[in-house]
Image (cartoon, rainbow, N blue to C red; front, side, top):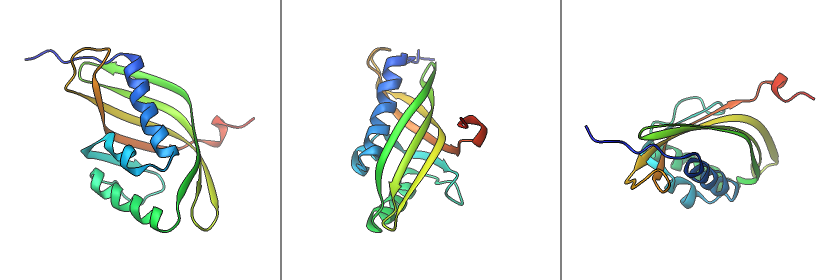
Length: 144
């Protein structure tokens, strides 16, 4: 068995930031480049799991065609859990989108699972997302 590189926290934060930044810019090309073709997606706003990146890309394209775009997307409360060969990133996210017919805002918790690909060391691994999961933020978690 070969040794699997365990990414460091900074590498995971950088990979997650790239995904959040691309999403915030409604930059589908950059956003989807961060995900493996076989990545899966679970979104509370969708009726079923998206079984691969292509399924989500088709959904995204339909949204954009209808006038959808991200107005703002802010990440907070990050947690990084690393293991040999990958990492789990969780955070809270506040997002506002323009649907083409008005704006909608969400406060959610997100999990992104990364796999290490072509890594040379923990400081510079190539991390690719293999799973993304969004769930609604419980009201009690953000009540003032």
